[in-house]
Picture 1 (cartoon, rainbow, N blue to C red):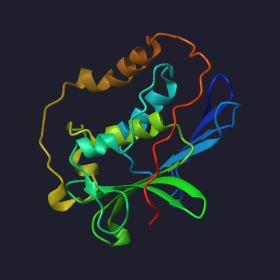
Picture 2: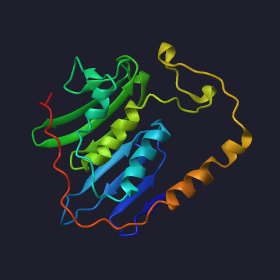
Picture 3: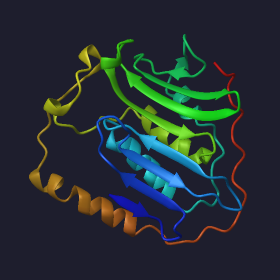
Picture 4: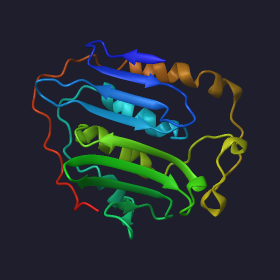
Length: 207
């Protein structure tokens, strides 16, 4: 599945593949901003992807210039022991702004232990991705609100997972997508004025 923005500058593709990221977003270069790319792995929570796409499609006037690390620090994330990013309080999620030999990228890795089989999902955001989009992802990642899932379809997270059974009316599930679409389509249709992008936060020391 491929979606393209009305101005033909942004493309979102969904391509399920066992060995590649499932979700890719590519932005062409403009006079105001260089090209950028973002991709999410197969098991990335839908709330994370939705936070990114909501920020992507929201008018970009009066943007906050907060650092993408800010939501994580506010949620109690700590400096990582083995790299220069931040680690979640439970130790399974890691975010790092990696800069080395001219590279500039953000990496998110959610894994249990050092075993490759323990990886839950991962994401990549190029360093030229607008900071407010990266902050939307880290904000969703740090959000402590419970998420609705079928417990039989969750990856095995051992003691990291807290599950509660809640009876949800069938109507709520049947019309959840319609309500979300309605909410998105009724947002103010404003065209942002041309403005330079916010200055990116100072990168952390390269690992």
